Length: 412
Image (cartoon, rainbow, N blue to C red; front, side, top):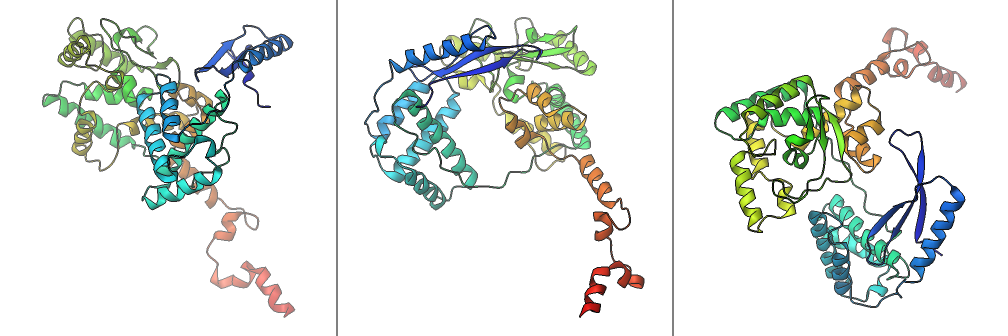
């Protein structure tokens, strides 16, 4: 029988101690984590069993409903637990699944329906990566339903998404970063109210996401310790509601040059504007929308309109053909890895919930790594190195270079 409650150890921040935690899904489908506050394994296991019995006493029987109704129920249960953008992607994957297999009973869904959905995606000209993403959304929905007791088993548990080539991570070269900063300074001089140069430098030094930078306030900066805290924001008189992606708050280092630029920027800011990068006029406009009830959490992720449009104009002015603002973050994280930070340290500073995200998207192979690999291949020790075998043959002594061929000729 599948366990409804999982017992695990959670290390402390200094990695010198730990405590036991209970992970489970409650009757409303929400993920819960309870800290037991001790390190007694026997006591922790007893507490896990007690919670297990409590949950099993309220487990619902497997349900019978149409897929469309089941998906609607699932969206309602998870609303507020995941980002609205993720909720929209899940809803789109659900609609495509119903269009593929029909509005059948949820208990009738089988593994073959998952295979049919993959073929359907390719028939609709979807990329393999898009299909794989939709399958991840669907598998999460069915997994949660199984944990709630709505399904006897997860029908798509063993379904493997199509393989696809990982996209190359775009990392800005040093000269491109300099050109971007210079172009941003010129863009500001033409009348842009956003401090683009400071914004770009902050991203290159801290690896903060766009939403994290645009929702950073002056209270988040500690000028004495030269750090900035990435913290969620409540919905109150001077700030709008905003949540951090993937993980909780974290502190990031600031350079002395950034601290100087931030101090100068703060001196030039009008009173009553708590946000670092949201212009005062825009802040007042958002406050009016918030008071009128027309501002949403989703809009708060990027409070400055046409952000990508303005950055692309700066990039083009810098003479750079491709690249996004998020590539600045990738550049920062790749620099950290190149200069000796461990994968785990980069993960913590980046705010990733899983180490696989750090490995897959951000640890780009830098030019100096390629140069070192090339130098290693070219370093040879005669007779026993790969480089010696790959070296162009010497026509004057070809027989000596290829003794195996000579030996075979003699035997024949």
